[in-house]
Length: 260
Ligand SMILES: NC(=O)c1ccc[n+]([C@@H]2O[C@H](COP(=O)([O-])OP(=O)(O)OC[C@H]3O[C@@H](n4cnc5c(N)ncnc54)[C@H](OP(=O)(O)O)[C@@H]3O)[C@@H](O)[C@H]2O)c1
Figure (tube, protein in one colour):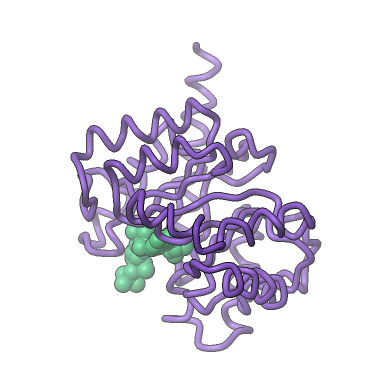
């Protein structure tokens, strides 16, 4: 597994990120979810992504309870826009994740510049800032879900957004709001500015043939401007395949770096 610094955040993450968005589909209990997270950790996946809206923070929390907190980096999100509910989401995340701090807290699914402005005017951003000052959050970021175009300009230009989770896959599928080649330029600009970049929808939320999965996942690992490849793992076999591909990619990148 390759470990690298998440942009200028100072956080060290595994390049393969466990996306826990659909963990509940296969892990019917919190304990079963925790078991899969711990299996992933055993295989070297130290970067875990969840959200209040997924209902999987408790699953991660049960795993966190059984390990040293500093073994992993947790990224979570809230879609709440106003101050009171965003602050409540942060407290809930701390409780459910059984932790005293959240490594990365994202404004969930920013869809447009207006949406970002709303998170400012209604107070969610202030709730994030206060939690950061209090040491409850280490890094503030956002996800842009499937959107590109002016939303990317807005979040890249925001000086306090240090991490961006965005859509990218081999054919630019699911992307809305602008062309894929331009989206890759946005990602590169953000990366060059030192933002931490994670990509999702790498296997189009599962909407590609099973036999094509390795090729699409490999494309994600080949994207040099992505610090992390977030895959929606739900079972042991995904861990085996994804970790194998992450290791191969790490080997290739090491050889390339040595040759350069
Ligand atoms: N707005 C946001 O911030 C946002 C939105 C969506 C997702 N996310 C994050 O991104 C993560 C990934 O979600 P995504 O929507 O981008 O989905 P994805 O990773 O493109 O696809 C995940 C789905 O692909 C299928 N799959 C088949 N082989 C796989 C393999 N080897 N590894 C992983 N998945 C495999 C599974 O579906 P089947 O079991 O149906 O085959 C799995 O549920 C989520 O878990 C979440 O953490 C964030």
